[in-house]
Amino acid sequence: MEADNGRIVVHIDPDIEDLIPGFLENRRKDMATITEALHVEDYETIQRMGHSMKGAGGGYGFDEITDIGMRMETAAQDEDRDEILGQVQALSDYLERVVIVYDA
Amino acid sequence: MMAILVIDDSADDQLLLRSFLQQEGYDDVMLAGSSSVAFDYLGMSDQDSKASTIDLILMDIVMPDINGIELCRLLMKDERFRNIPVIMVTAHTNDSNLQGAFDAGAVDFIHKPINRIELIARVRSSLNLKHETDKRIQREKELVESTQKLNKANQKLRYLSYVDELTTIANRRYFDEFLAKEWHRASRQQKPLSLIMIDIDFFKDYNDTYGHTRGDVCLSQVARTLSGTLKRPGDFVARYGGEEFVAVLPDTGIRGAAKVAETLRANVQTLGLEHKSSPIDTVVTVSLGVSSAGPAPHSEPDVIVTLSDKALYRAKQEGRNRVVVHRHE
Image: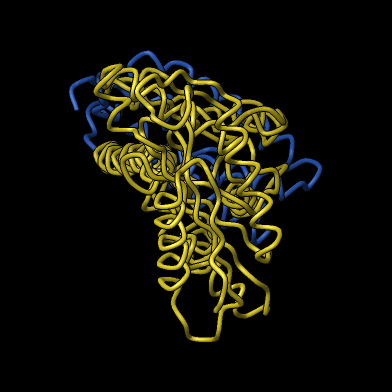
């Protein structure tokens, strides 16, 4: 990924431009859901969400989200609180820095 | 227009798949997030549905309310859905899942995250398969219909090949076949078989006097009378030649046959078809020769035809309009 002034530039298929805002919004919601699930130690939910993110991210063009999802899924299987929190942070960070260029 | 059903509990994946598919020109994409929605689109609970209108299913293996592999199995069992290709689209990538999916009837498998090019290639290939399958099923249906039509036509042809066109009674071909059958049956069952040869008297003169068209009408009327006289279902009369007829009476001995012959003669005379050039009567009459046999095993029916014919000849010699019965001397 290109790093430029702390921004992460991602090239996305212009044909799915209309889906991107919804996708990113869903990921923000995911973060809230995961954080809540962590409070009550509901690792199953976190695993499912990680799995879902793993499957969806790369398809939209966000390979990093697939990676985060994969790590999230494993962390939930291991019931590793710290790792889960770490991945939530990574996702938050990513969403803040990501810049989309429609030209894939 | 090919219709594609997407079954996936992830809304993100549903939307992505639909977007990719629609970009490719597949406008009819249905999204189902649960098995009940999927069943609705398929028309699963609709007892009257003959076949589904869906041409392809993209399905995730793991969903909260139903296992994709189980769903696949269910579809394969149902005749209405068996021909819909199923492509598994899933982030689960271990071999047991793959094997399970194929065992359940899936035709292909795509990993998540989805590669657009791979998706389209697999979709196109499966839709081609579906299209060819649909064509094949249609051809098979047409083949069955054609075969039925052919069988009917053959039946009709067979029937026509046994019928004398003019008089519509059985023809010579029918007579030859069925005499042989009845002869051998009589031999097996040790029952007698009788045969009556019938010939219209002075028919040539009738044609010369009244013309061939009326001659044809006369033949038809005589035939109808002869046929109508025979009451028993096993008996039949056929047109043997130009103005010659033959009646076969299974399970009938000489006395019974002689009675029937006399009735035939009388009924033709009673018809009262005017025949002014007949030297023996004012109406059309027939001469008849009767013979009977208890067929010996491995014998042929020619003998009974010959004997009836000889008796007919004598009937002509002795003045016509009469029955002569062949007696064993």
